[in-house]
Image (cartoon, rainbow, N blue to C red):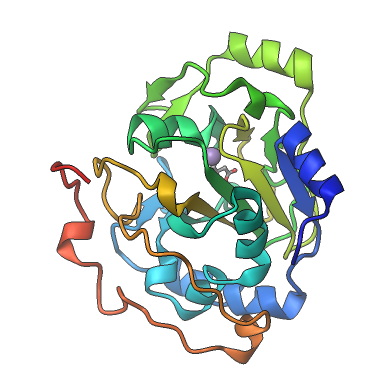
Length: 281
Ligand code: SIN
Ligand code: MN
């Protein structure tokens, strides 16, 4: 998959590209079938919502689940990012966000690079976010919202919010959001399961709670240019990965053929990946 000059221009202007139906129904089924098995496990990689047992986010499934290990090496997801960065990429973060029916809580307004800079000492915003919808995303089930063009402003002042939800986040205040929206408006890409969004790590985004009876499971993969790897290991390795080896892609049909993959954490997460490592990266 190769981005056209027009897509590159659009990404530069808006900070995101939307690819509706990028993965087929059969490919998505290989992934969704696996989610309940991952979410039912009692492991540190499953962060549950503040007021319920529902999984808010699951980390690093590509290290212990075959279908997600394939997705993490999928050329339809990796190639456009490599093209934009002009170099190899590694997996900085891998999440399956539940946003489950009735219980899915908000994600406050933020930029991902704010966290990667403040917590992980990632030198530049040369890491890309990919969202892949495992359920249809509608106006009802808490779609991801963007402020187009906000990535052009670089890192915006943020405060560390440790209380609003079960997951700490560097969040942007309401006055700033009001000004950014007055300038750039808001969008919320909606589409069928299998759709993919590629978005800049400085693009300001958020999502509301899911009061609908429909789940909104999405995978978020963050691919970082290898030369831009993180310099500090303040967060556990399953949240901010420490293996900077370039992703080696599988074939385009790998999800359907069930191409063989290694599962380095298949027998459990290594103890040193469960905690910060405070010596230099
Ligand atoms: C995120 O910003 O990391 C997640 C947002 C969402 O799942 O809606
Ligand atoms: Mn985010």
